[in-house]
Length: 232
Image 1 (spheres, rainbow, N blue to C red):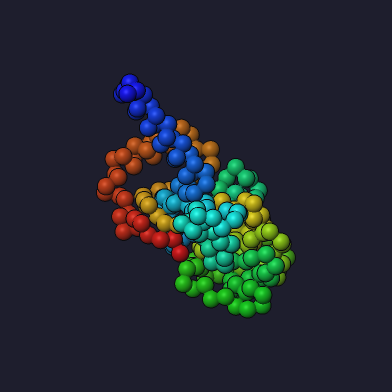
Image 2 (cartoon, rainbow, N blue to C red):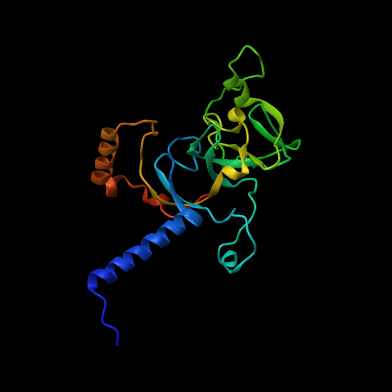
């Protein structure tokens, strides 16, 4: 009979297995993501913490793993997390509205795909009552916000817009998202805590103060009604 393993070794092996599994899961299956801005309101709020299904768009053959976690192509209406094309070190989250080959246009804030009006009232919001015309006398950011295209989505790219349509930095301004930049599909909200929009380059002190606030107000301020809400 082989000698029993020391207790410390059993704990170390269990810890290593857990780390390997967590790393594998985060790399290939699911990843946590925090909503940093209000561009997807009212569906996703600043401070929502979501799980992203990284497996669903993964290329590969139909295997036993795929039967448990089915793969499929990106669809119109999917809320996707992707690397920001102008700074791939940052992750963005938007709704895919245009697939490769689609002709996308925005006319007076209304979306048209391949010449047909798309009714998005179920999930988008317009908070600015003004509609800016297509005129050279306005800043490009305003003209493109309310009137854009028509634009043909290139092969292996997706056209993505924020649900908070009047306040979203999206494909209207920096172009389509390469398919290789798509990281996964937003799955569900696992925790939601009110927060201010994140600022790039925030100091370590500011981050520690935020952590202290979360610890002090965790039970009182957590938006429990959003827990385990499916992202649609």
